[in-house]
Length: 505
Image 1 (cartoon, rainbow, N blue to C red):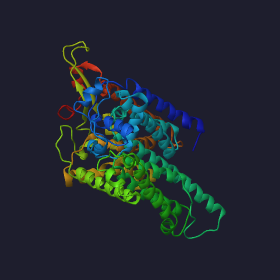
Image 2 (cartoon, rainbow, N blue to C red; image 1 turned 180 degrees about the vertical axis):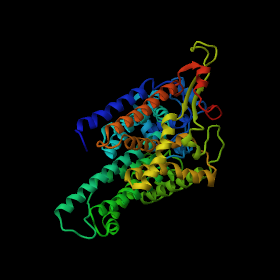
Image 3 (spheres, helix red, strand yellow; image 1 turned 135 degrees about the horizontal axis):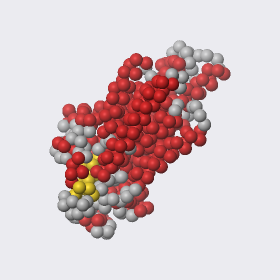
Image 4 (tube, rainbow, N blue to C red; image 1 turned 120 degrees about the vertical axis):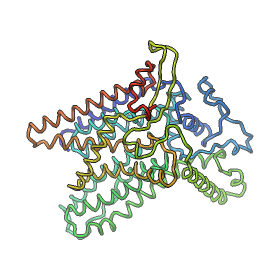
């Protein structure tokens, strides 16, 4: 890594602070329950209070907006299971939302706090991993800045939905694996310089960064099941990196060495460890008598051995019910979109819209939170991803391959569900793809700038191109800002910000 560690941390931290100011300013506005916050804010509060999701009374949203938390259905102690709420996502993301509610109360700020925190942390992580991949603090900071300025990431960071937590854990796992790649190669070089040669090379022992990646991948799956797509893709990618490292130091049988020396550890850290994290995330359900399908009373009346067996059986039965729900989810929705349209931003989701009377200087006002990416970044990212394909085909550069793997893991599986199940899907499902899209932009920016040894004219032109793109992204985000934050503006100004009238309205 060139340069000192000071700016390697200070630059990304400053970018993260900038993103944090954007995300925490008026975080509790609008004072409303937006879109799917109606599910996750209450489920998170139920986990804090009961250990499992709990049914609510009629008009629970209105009761919350009136300042009361008396929203739960009452059940007799011997019929507590009748108050259990059937939910279709694992609990970790809701536990994280609930932590903010526990600290700041059952208010819009409280249930959005955790999302804003992980949104800011993801800016810092992306800046650091981009710096590690490019060996450039400036490009690392550019990655963090672009993520801070992306509209979809911004809106989800200010909304109590699960997808921002999925994105965070996926990005954290990727960052850990990139660090593990450097760590493993350093260990191999040390072995090469100090030990007798062999066909396979050494075992690398405990790999702390890969263990951390396994924990993060398990957490991603414990937020949403779609985290498993990244788990599979990253596990294979990491093993291929191991084989490439063994080949790079001249071992005669690098793939056999990887299979013999690295595979067992990889299975433990990227399969068994994530599975353990996933099971632990359900601790509240196991410990509560009020979880859906829990059968607590029946299980406890037959002794401890039966209790364990029946608990696992009930848990697996619950999972098969959820699997049936997800594979059969084809209910039409006004804001649904197919995955092929996501990179083009053709159908964003209106999280909130009202037409307030007054407050904007005209008779017709609008107030909106539109879940949409910043078009300059997304369309620039699409061009950069095409460039990454060409770069990887031409040079086999691992960085281009890693970006493409991450993007594909977040995008391509949804085509199967669109074709086979006609599943209802939304643009915000694409948020785990966004960090990899931005990494593609940053890697392309590095190619445009050229190496430090490039002629000064080339560097100047490259800097002008990259700087102009960054400025356009900033201006585009500023232009969209009122419809991302529910500012009260004239209807004409709201309409002028709808890039595709048919799809955005």
